[in-house]
Amino acid sequence: MKVACLFGSLNRGGAETLALDILNESKNPEIEFICIHRKRGELYSDFKESNIPLFQMKPRNRFDLFYIIRLRRLLINEKINLVHSNQLIDSFISNIVTLFLPIKTVLTFHGHGLNYKFLQKSLRWVALRRNDLNLFVSQSQLNFYKKRHRFHSHNQFILYNGISFSKFDISQNHDFRKELGIAKNILLSGSVGSFSNGRDQLTICKFLFLLNQQGVEFYHIFIGAKSKTEPQLYDQCVEFCKKNKLSDKISFLGLRHDVPEILAQLDSFIYSTAHDTFGIAVVEAMAAKVPVFVNDWEVMLEITDQGKYATIYITKDEQDLYVKFLDFLSNRDKYSKKAIDASKFVRDKFSIERHLAELTKIYSNILNP
Image 1: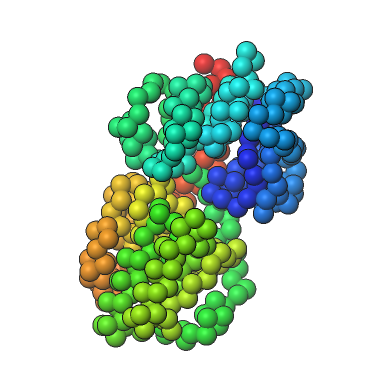
Image 2: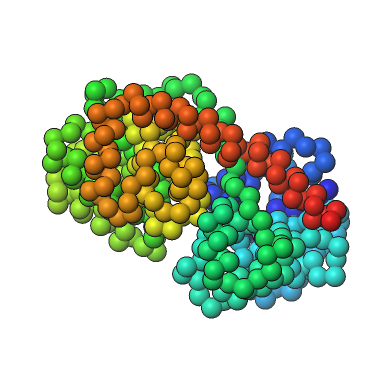
């Protein structure tokens, strides 16, 4: 079978990173991938190095009919059997391009679409009914869509995100504590995630204030970009830390490309979500054998086996997080053992190898019903 992965741009994002891992890890001779994109981006060279055929097709405007014709011709010439999209607009384009062709269409939903405007809502309505299959990255995400949208359940399927855990097994060449200028006896905690409405870093800042009042020697890092559309979310956290004299105990590092190496050097990982659909950062921290603290959002319970492999605290309750973190400080060995078990759990359940095996079955079932 021959599959075309359709993208808008090749910028660094969860869907693009997942697709790149799939292309790099896929060793199944039964599947041949190509990648079609409209714009280049940060990951363009990485996609190029994957040795997967890469095609750039850019429309001249929103109503470029020749773009549709060229894309349709490319799919025919490449003898594509299936088009896999990760955004609503790409899904809509694939539905138009494959009209009256024996080519199947698949879309992976990565978010909840809480802030969709009329056009996005319309594209979602079409996608839920027109695609041969829609994939959801967690059971909780699918449950969310079922409660709010009417659609046929026969063409909806859950496929957890897959993570290439080989990047967590690299040797540690960089002393991150030395970079920060902190001693080895200082408790080093961290959080990973962009400062967007899907996260709640302010609750973590409030928790760190409580920890500081207790006199605990710690240093915390926030890894994640400041949102261009919601800069106030980042600014609120920075201002809170300044106002409460935490600035010398906290660093806002922005984007980092060495997250796996950093995670392996943390003593704890703290996460607070507002409406994540999966939680890649949480799974990566668990894979790195770091004790994880995460709020009781539905999908976080799902990916931690109802809290068996992480410490769950009440959403937006920094006091509850504080109490549970004090228990961690008093029982470090117990939490370390739990973190080792958690690593085994996620490396089996959310590996890129397992994702690829499931994806292969899904493709085969669509093409050979």
